[in-house]
Image (cartoon, rainbow, N blue to C red; front, side, top):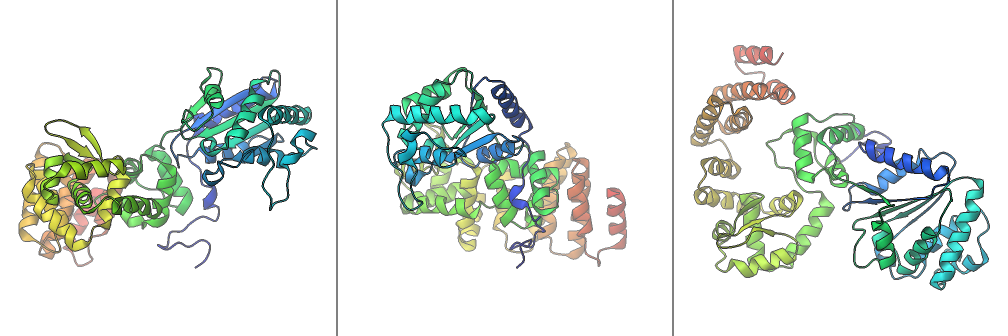
Length: 465
């Protein structure tokens, strides 16, 4: 396998690890803050957001535009958070000039741990170092993953930053939660100060995810697929990139095929699920079959769990479910679509089909019942195809082209004859076109077999054109 290949054959670009999309406003804010620092107004910027949202990637992209500024970077590490002055030693070790004598104990050989310093001495030492460095130009101090940094380093950093006055220093701190209780009170107050510029990061938009996909495998996702990817990952770049790497292109494009969770994410979810016990396991699996949310009673009936509350409590504590409507008729839901995907994809095919078959009889809504029948199907089914087609035509009559197109595509897949399959596919193309989903329509039309009725093929291709 060459460096440009992947398991699924995507045409990856050589610099795929450098793919970056969106964040135009956030980059402009960082550049504005850097401009003030260059003029002698020290600035502190907080970049915060959940894991994988792109905090480090944003800072790296900004540093590419920082010219000849002196950059000192350090990062917290969960396994080293108890190592005193570990982060401070990272800063000191990158200094291009001789370091102050009071910081000398922090510089060790690569195999030894950094020394320790009294908090005031460490803070004074860092302040002296920053003063010396800026004589040659502006300084950018970057602390990544502050929530995992050691307290001694954070206290020294707080001491130094509070005493900058007319210095050419831009400090950038990234954290998942800047008010996390494990952070020292001083750094929490500093990050919450009105003078600190906060840049909260949110998920990427569908267009930004489509751009990311185009950078990664020279192919841009259609808008409908990008919207689905955004909903599935909440726009988290780490999760989106993992799926772009792991999932075949045709699955990403086919909005009727469920998306999985990234492998590493799924492993964590399933490890938590395994520790919850058999009752909670069955309950969580039942919810995943019913959808992202459902009434607790319906899930308990499908799971055949007679005492659902203890099982629900274990699942909630494990972060697998949440109560969205407590009370007499409680509603439960997954906290994230990726948790749902991880659980659902892990259910064996036979057990999953059985759950969907029983769910079709449990739910009251005809649309939901049809969905379960489709997901339980193992091959052509004349009655199911007829039910889906009838439902789609009722929806089309009221202008619900999106759901009509989806139902017609499902009907085509379970049709029992080639002629019926092709005719339903043509109706699906018409519905998708009327919904504005031209790319999907074109792909569906191109997928008609060469043996299909020439009149149907000519009609649908002309309609798409």
